[in-house]
Length: 191
Image (cartoon, rainbow, N blue to C red; front, side, top):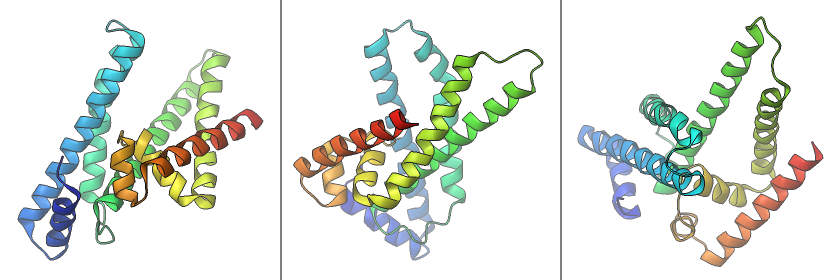
């Protein structure tokens, strides 16, 4: 992974019109998204075993998510991105939007089918939308904690990396993550 200083320098060079820096920036973005996907696959394999349906289903969707996020980032206005932290947060936001859009699309397709929808599948979609709304509400109320949560679970960063990006202590990040999970669980339980 590029150091925070070098990535921030690349961003500044790109914003100054350096086309080579733009190439480096998107190369970094693609490699970072790929790293996150590999970490998620490894976690899934460890949790569910190598021959599991979750891992088998995620092979193509993970690759598709990486490519779609990369394409959206390449078309995004990065003029407001001035640091590695902002770059990661933008990537996390784009990946979350893609996942929510895909879930909505799948739900719409299932509604168009002629047979009755299994209730369990419908509940999963509804929970995803409730979680998305809760995350938006949480982000408005607790921006630092929300950023820590997104960097941890959407970008797959370690607590130490998050503390460097958000410029606070690792112990504060641990507290923020614990608070974030607790807050979201209480909102999900109430829904």
